[in-house]
Length: 206
Image 1 (tube, one colour):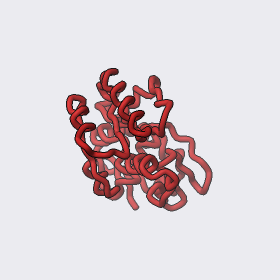
Image 2: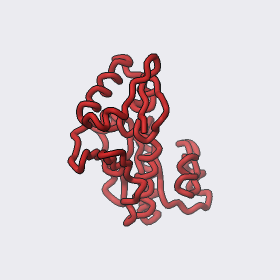
Image 3: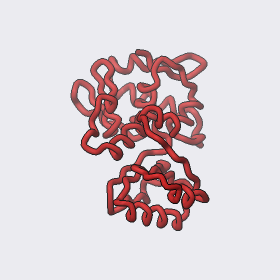
Image 4: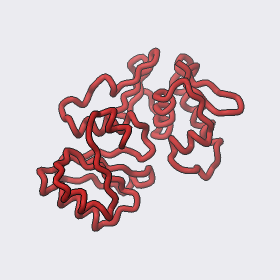
């Protein structure tokens, strides 16, 4: 949030469940509520709903882990969106911008273009020569992370942490499997940017 506050030129007030009441009674007027759903009690969710409703339907961005997607129920009232907890900073920036400034959703920063590939961070879509590429969520997340963090080698362990968001029980081989699948789907031109760094991991070369 501190990094995003500088990128978006906004002020951020961080609050924990036990300090939520203090935050909303601080006298500040909020334009967006970002709520991390990890371990949030139903009582707090209800309190957030009440606060949002009582204040003209403040937009909400819900942050959740991938395993929570199946049980996700988006709020019926007001504008809301969600983002995975292990999403890159660029994705958070796009999602927050959409909610803060509706009508200006598609901005240049939504897109990462490299050679014949375009990644739309706002819609989680990848195209090659204008044609959509059928990627799984984790394949997309891995590709978008590497492409938005170029020219730096990441170990398999670091990629598991940054992309999967946890220590994957199957071990680091899953990174190699996903890299292989991504390379095969994006074609040789983009695959050549995804470089194997011997003894380290992978690097996206521009």
